[in-house]
Length: 381
Image (cartoon, rainbow, N blue to C red):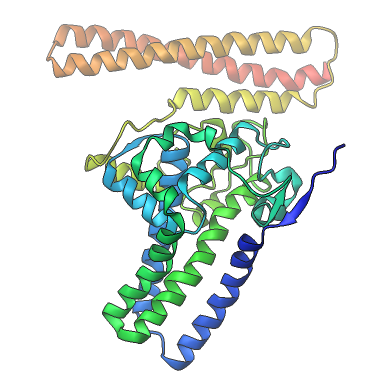
């Protein structure tokens, strides 16, 4: 195996190692010499939300995965506060992330969790392999056409320092004088940067190591409701890797996903549009098939053809389920149009067809249950 050269990325390493030290020292010095007021934690929360959501909603779901469209004002907000997160320009970040999805867990994956927690969490940023760090911008040709992102990429360092460190200090000064400026810098600048970094890093590391895989085990991604609380909803990572274009990570209404709620809110006020979401039946099909494959995996075939027969039944049922579910979506859309057009006869006709399709889908679900019930018998027959 070819030996890959490795070298410490001095700039990244110093920044990642010194910011936590500076944050702790700065908060202690500020608290003991100037005192902490309500201003400092308020600034911390505002910058933490602005920078964190600019990464999860902006860099990740909007720019990397094109899961929806956003107005120029929101794109500018994400560019400014995304830079303030100190996680690189949107173009560089998205280039790395698209490669991660294209080559998850493989050698080309820049932060593959197969290399261990600490590599995927932080070491991949601190260590350059095969020469100085570079980003394959051929992955983001579509994003380079956005003048806001091109501008941010060109002036990234100045924007990052200005928005991530300078602006909270200025706001702190405006409301609290010199103590407020120092507090804004150490709380909303330094300390917030550390929290934002490790929240994002947990998705690269913990979300590929701990949790469940309800939608498939083709890669190491996992769902973790607990992690979702720390990452603006990004913890439903197995769902995300399975349905990458979906603007949601937590697709159920009760899933904790502030990034999803942010997108939905701005869609209501018409600053976002074109929200892409996976049909419920498609999610159901993926989850059920993974349940079937998981149940079948330990089965020792009692005689030739038994497992093939189960798979054939499952394939037939899945094909029927998907076909009828698509037909149901189409009929329900037509019924909606008939209601708008006040076509009572057409609406009644469609309702009868919808009811019949729902009965067929219910029968297919019963067949799925029967197939799963036959799996244990296949192992002991």
